[in-house]
Length: 329
Image 1 (tube, rainbow, N blue to C red):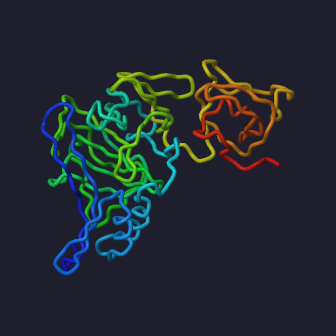
Image 2: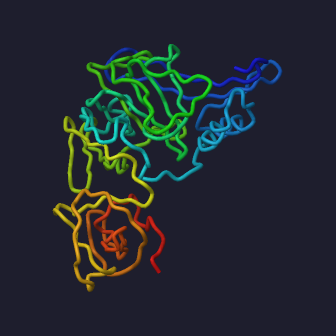
Image 3: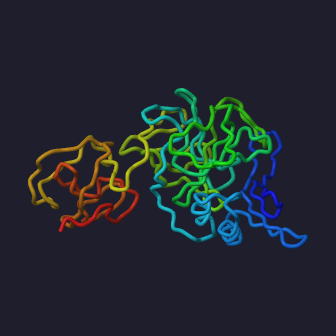
């Protein structure tokens, strides 16, 4: 709250009972006092965005204003490629103990996964503005990112407490996996309950890429993740490949071991190499040529890789049917 007590920034949380399948819900709010009444905007509303821009920088920092400008309803189009990493050290493999499920278990959308392992250090999935949600500042951190997404981290132990400066960088330490239920809910063993949101609403993980894995729904807590043709079900490990750059893709041989590379954009050009399924490659530029059909459909789009060789976009997951690099011509 400002010293004149005319502006406030905080969290509004609905506590949950401490039972399995119950989880709290929470939102940021910004409030302005007019005469004797308070005007309050919850995240996800246009009023929140408006108040964020008008609030003094003593209560809403400049970098927060920019991030909060994305939190109005229907304001942006969210990409299937989230540009997020998994919430632990790149290069570590953690167990996905619970596949895509609701924030509270069976409720939709299936926005959440459960993870544990490695050094148990939970890290930020991307740069952003971090806030503790529970009144005792324990257990639950939310990070608002500059691409319209936010990420939740629940059950944390010994977590950080952002105060005057909320901005953190990708990979920043948030806390350890734990069983904390300061805002309610239940945890039988240490893990992080990791969830995807936008404008205060949960976002389904189905078809979304995070840390090099594309997630798919089954029944609650089932489902699976794919990296190229590799499939991982619950209780299996997920290697953290990190955040994909905008011009990168994941080779998907659609069940095969390798994909052919050619000297030009089409089947009429000679094969001059190959690339392994699951490799992450850089795309320099794109062109059009022969059509191929892969896991994600048919296309005549071709990608020239950093080594000058070409591969069909049918065998490269990029999260879009369009190009991720400029035209070669």
